[in-house]
Length: 323
Image 1 (cartoon, rainbow, N blue to C red):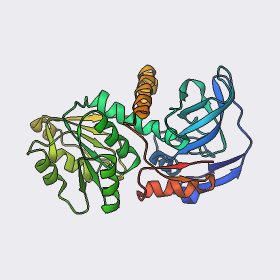
Image 2: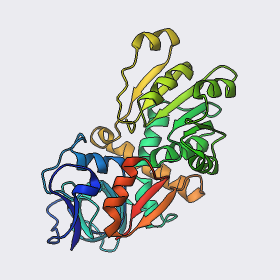
Image 3: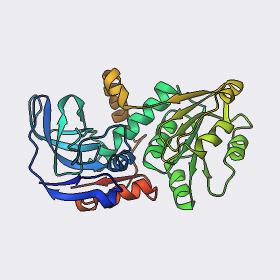
Image 4: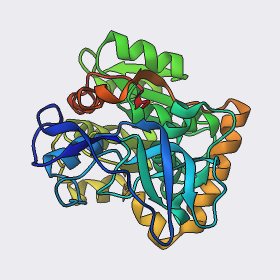
């Protein structure tokens, strides 16, 4: 079968190689699936660079989530359509993959394969960040950084579904237009607008009740200047490449909370909550309240370029590999 493999660390476009490899065989507690769609995530690039918290042995196949069709394995009906994380080092950018049987979830019937693949990690992260960590309430103001990207677009939709007023931050007119189409009540172009002043003006000086930040760096710094009294900043990631160092004295005098979110830990500590979240996301998808913004569907041979472009920040919504 065909699979992308990484033999050494480096930029995705430089180190990902499409190779012929033996088809994997499922072991106890595993399923063999045909990959119907594999969503491209920022961590896929970090895996290639050797900068992710998980460092699989070389050679490995990147691709951390997929929608697939069960082919074989104990306790599963062949032909079942599922979404799941890939079991590294055998990732999702391949024709077939082996996955953990206890990680699979039924693919939502309201979504096609590419949309279903994109509903998983990004939307689970958004749901846990907004609801479990920040306790977002209807009527509050939610500020979402990178609102036109894969992670941000999920948070925008989930925020609107929760009854929040959503302010989206983007870079450039093309991404700003997409954020408006997603349902943002206000869009701020970080390249031309004064973010802090715009948030203060839109909220009557109060600031944002919840900030969803997958960017870090300057985005975090500005968020701390416009977060509301008793507001919550959810730290999701550092796509800017800069990890901020919060001033705890500032959090003290302004009475706001800094919340970390690593969704993968919930799979270890509270798997029942992950399944309950999936049921809620499936319901929202069936009602049309959320739908992953799949901006590109690329063939398997385009995966390396797709991962590179997601890392470079030039894409919008989700880019999905369809073998």
